[in-house]
Image 1 (tube, helix red, strand yellow):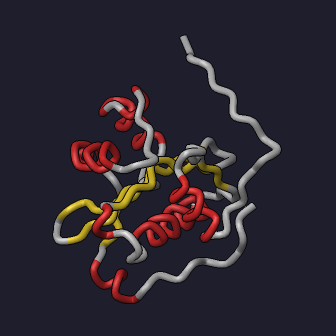
Image 2: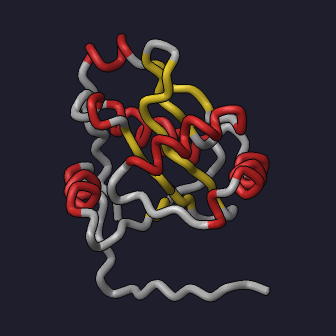
Length: 154
């Protein structure tokens, strides 16, 4: 369960960075960022076609952070009509600790709330210590009593 507090963002970060909806035109830039970001695991679900479908099914929810006309942060966001899901939060290493990730999270959570989604989940690799620390710092609850199961469709 998330806490009700919203983490603060430094005023400097808000002035320097713009948050806008991710579009499929951003694909090459976002995948380049994901590929070099430790803790982001990519699969066939991250192909251009799959991301295009995801964005079509979840219009306006996924966001990017822009600085000097470059994408420096990403966060995929979608929902199933009941729960929200976050994927691939990534920020360029040289831009970290400036409030970008927090701004992206706050924006997508507000977008989910605006469409009536009250709860959100995300997956973090157990080996991603920095990711686990980040989400803990934002007040997200690690769910130890649940197990994730996966199966290939088709």
